[in-house]
Image (cartoon, rainbow, N blue to C red; front, side, top):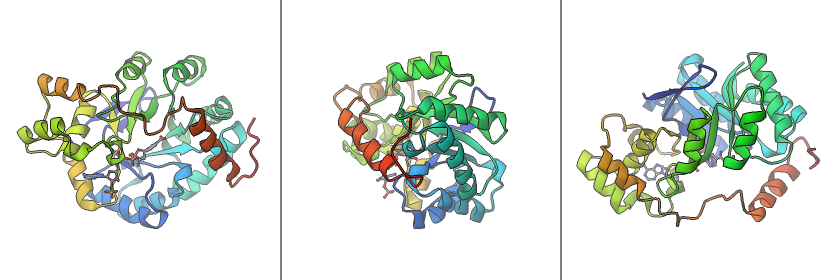
Amino acid sequence: MLTVTLNTGAVMPMLGYGVFQTPPDETARCVRDALEVGYRLIDTAQSYGNEAGVGQGVSDSGIAREDVFLTTKISPSNMNHDRAAASLEQSFKDLRTDYIDLVLLHQPIGDYPGAYRALEEAVDAGQVRAIGVSNFYPERLIDIALLTRIPPAVNQVETHPFRQESAAHEQMTSLKIIHEAWAPFAEGRGGIFTHPTLTRIGAAHGKTAGQVALRALMQQGVVVIPKSVRRERMVENFDVFDFVLDEAEMQAFASIDDGAFPRIFDHHDPGMIQWLVEERVKNSALGGGHLF
Ligand code: NDP
């Protein structure tokens, strides 16, 4: 397994398993399958509604807690200091653990500096090993990176062959923040699994287009967390450690991103942010929409 070392010294696998949109009643089976296949990083979030399934899957697998790297994310509906702290307690219960390896702020909305302070306190208390953010574009990331007591270890942003985010990656590298890709397969859009360039590169190594995408992103220094509910795809997506792409292949991969592919979720679009706020905050289990 390739790994990266976070700013806290924690070691994070470069390939993990994501459970966004995995139904809560299937999550335990999926996580157990993924752990049996070999994954050792599981990526969930409070807003996915399946943390309890993740906790059960890890427990069912029989794999020692310390051998699994668990990531969760503070929901937009919990985005202030007190709610973040309280919701973290629930995450510990649901995940059946007394520490979490990495906790991210899911979105830069609401009182996220307050929520971040709650994460810093959880690090101080030894409950959380590393903290970070998600969906922070460069202009937001620089702010939180420079003004926090414990700078983010990770920024998880939409990244896939069609949007490789090379400028954002450079900024993260200069800030010593690990770039983690959400939707490394672009959620199956853009014909990614039959893309001609990915397929051509794969043919030279006996690999699929999807495997080339994961391998290339990791070679760019990006952590990837592909999702599949199907065990045979979990196996395929994990089988990416026995080949290396050369410079010409990496250049061909880079050329797939021609800037034309629209983001799956665009944080510069006020309509999308309004949707997030209305859906997640109004429906908050903690009630009310007043987060400031
Ligand atoms: P992905 O890019 O991982 O794509 C998942 C889709 O690809 C599913 O439809 C899956 O179908 C299909 N698939 C997976 N493997 C294969 C394969 N080998 N061949 C063909 N199809 C395949 O999308 P996600 O949105 O799930 O992103 C990955 C993870 O990133 C999430 O699960 C979540 O943990 C995280 N994430 C974080 C976000 C954030 O805001 N921080 C936002 C979105 C995702 P099937 O399951 O049926 O196999």
